[in-house]
Length: 378
Image (cartoon, rainbow, N blue to C red; front, side, top):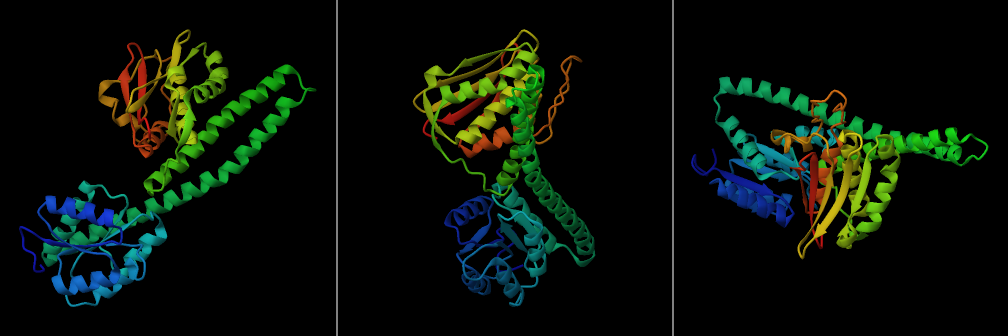
């Protein structure tokens, strides 16, 4: 190893962002690593030559010399070919992954990197370095298989993103044609009503596509809530009006109780889609002749939004995992199939967290209450 020791390995962190450097230092020093920091590729090469680290955490995008060139030059320094280098990047795409591999990276992590993941990746890199030659052969095989799987996953995500983008135009086209039919006074009332139903379902499909796009943005660290004053009473009324046709078809009463909440600072589009997802979810599981309620309460520090139904509720053991991708609940009642897409609630969690808030599920006795807590001056 380098001049670090078995009890306190030395990690060189190269990142031009001061917050990222501070997080890495605090995280790794808490785990008894010795940490050296550098603010640029040039400074990182100098620090590498001076301190001979046991592992390097290297940012990709830096002014001047980027991470790829820094890695290539580092591999040419004395001892540089043996030190594990872990790339950190906000660009979760195949091209960046391939360039990292070509530059000589041992591992590849996408930002924002959680502290636990950072420590695990550094420990894995150090463990690989300590393996003897026979074990390293097997480790390299596993690493190549992992890299192949990672590359396939990135290709799948890029394809998914392209498909979602390409689907938006024809979906908007369907909505436009349905609007024309809905306004055509020469058509029977029943036909115009059917066109309205088509528009309702198209709105659900478009929201699903936007959810997928925002989930991808969140994974890339670029989902940002653009906050402005939002009148909760007006927003709630608009959402309930949109949901009214589906509620009547299911014989469910919609109740709005947000008048006292006033205005909050939030991203109007994101918040609207969060509440639309939760209302749709509640209507899906609400029994006939029951109620779905959207309510809001505020205090000096926070505003709490609640969407509650009177269905079967969410089992206690699933109230955390329900916000993960593709998690769907089974139903004890065959007349109420639990066939959710498994992405709407994931989007809700990510959008709420982009506001600095949190979302959780409570027992509404009966039913489930999805509760959103946002900073009052979010």
